[in-house]
Image 1 (cartoon, rainbow, N blue to C red):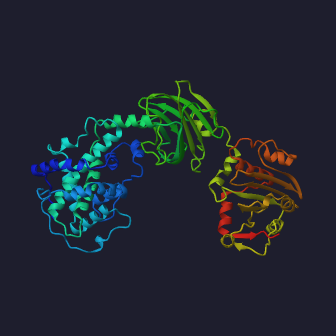
Image 2 (cartoon, rainbow, N blue to C red):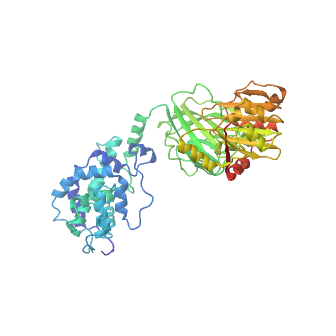
Image 3 (cartoon, one colour):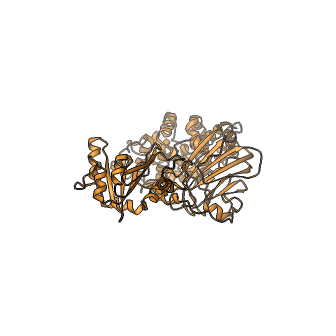
Length: 583
């Protein structure tokens, strides 16, 4: 087939204009709405869930075929069922030549005739046409695009004035353009005269759906659509609402905005959030990277201020239109962060919570934005604790809390459950025996795990590391180091301290010296014990829910004089040696 320019003659336009009404009245509203929303703004995505347009298509696949597949098998089958009989019974013999230069089919048979796994019938037939008439499908799309602008056709694409609600406008828009595409596709298929292996009615509907989908992604929505969508979103908006996800930020900022973020924002006032036209801008610790963000929209102010955040600032903002979204510079947002603020104007309070800004490389940065309608009021700073906030406000930075040195544990293989024990005054062999393990029977960690998995049992085993003056014992999801007898035996010639935690937020600290158990308790706060234990706990606030594991590891380090580092854990993993506990 030649690939010369395609012109839409008046004869073709007149045929299309006369044929469109025949099919338009047969198109079901639901798939028509789906097609009609293909160019709708992002906030309309939830009205047609599950539609994800492909960014790429396989080599050799026509643009039209990719579009049919993107519409989805179920909508395509429904449209085929609604139109097939009407298309099959229509007299196409009077159709003028829609695209000149067609050649006979390249052949019948071959791999391209094989239907694809979960494809609809229409998708399979369009693929068949791609094999028989290379370029025909995309030429059909070109004719449809050109016909949409012809004076005889363009008025028929307008949505009727009686369509006022979002569903009617979207359905009318989609049905009109699909009727156009089916009329053009019918003329093209009539001209191509495919062999009997091709179901003509199916081919016409399939080509029409693909061409209509491509056209509807490009043409403007009807003028009435924006107002109709706004009214529908307002009518369906429910409170409270929540969403959370990851957001890729750049330039140390993201925001909650109706249109986009301003190029600059001043954070010197509170060190966290700045009010801007159309929203608020939040200052992040990471310059370019991923942060976790949660958005909650409430019917009224929250009962209390959440306590487990470093920085909490509450500000007022005025919504001009409403429907603000969590966005990064450039307008990008996370796929899971689809929730928007109420789609109506007014005064709102925004409470911004932040943590992890001082450790931008640790992947711990997180934010929680809470929004509710309320009259404008002065800014309130509920919490100010991270060092970045102090720098931005031009204030002296506080000392770095010692527990921050252990935040790497949250992203390690022992993040969910482990016991870490440090022993002084003993050899590795002595520590192994204190834990009930045989120093003469080392095994590969992988082999131990495989054996326990095959037997579907939970049995204790430990790993050890010589720290040159101390011995580190790490139990992944084990708790042998919490046993009083183990701590006494391990500390017989020195000291031993352990920190245990699990997925249920259970924790325990243990301290022993010279064979005596000095203290063992759940570190919720208030416990002191003898002076040596009190010194290890000094300044560590276990009543606060944050960093309790990290604070426990600080106490272990203080008591024994040696802590665990990320490189220690790497050495254990590299050595790949463990010991089963049998005693």
